[in-house]
Image 1 (tube, helix red, strand yellow):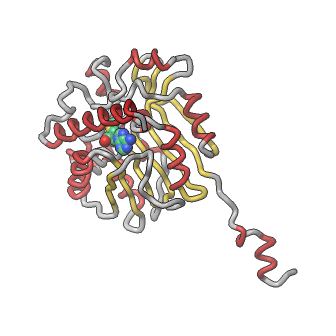
Image 2 (cartoon, helix red, strand yellow):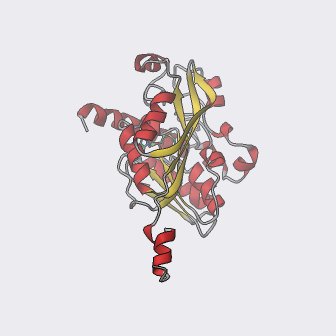
Length: 277
Ligand SMILES: C[S@@+](CC[C@H](N)C(=O)[O-])C[C@H]1O[C@@H](n2cnc3c(N)ncnc32)[C@H](O)[C@@H]1O
């Protein structure tokens, strides 16, 4: 990584460390006067609290969470609502923050499933562990690391979720390649993120909000689709859900890792095995 990308990542880490500290002392929206740290001073705070954070979860889901875990939501969508999680699955949340999506996923996959939350910010990891304890979920593991180098083995995860984090990455191609690596064949992604309309240049995105506020680093819809396809995903879709700034949207991103046929399960191999030569 270059020193500029190192510096940018450090700015992101500091911003979310500050956010976690504010949430721990009950200062709520990270002391920046908005509904979420994942928004920007340039976006009016009242409006931003309708576009980011806990309001994007329905009442039923919020009731499943301890109050502080719900308040810790800094996302721009609700990936657990789109990922169609099933009992027993292994889920990975990239940039798990205060743990809201990890806790909701843990309840969906049940005791036979496992949920990993990955985050680079110590203060967020501490908050998430505390929120998970309060929520009484035990099938969760919070890992320290960066989403560009996921500390899990290949083919080990059924579903990758993420909420308003990939836009913060300084190497989005690496994140998508890592998602492809850790997913099992046939595994899927259900991601919420900020995404720009294709006509917006990078400079125009920066005019609408800062990098640490989840705006300037957003990919456009076309860039996202192309990057997912380049990383080897199939069934790619990027759908806007709500506008967060002029020409920029909260979006749901879905894709699937191709199923590689297992040689032993091919009909010919099975027939040979059974002695039908
Ligand atoms: C906007 S918050 C979203 C948190 C959470 N997903 C939610 O919905 O509340 C971004 C989170 O991603 C983490 N993060 C940002 N960039 C990261 C990276 N490159 N690797 C790991 N974590 C990262 C931050 O520490 C922070 O906790």
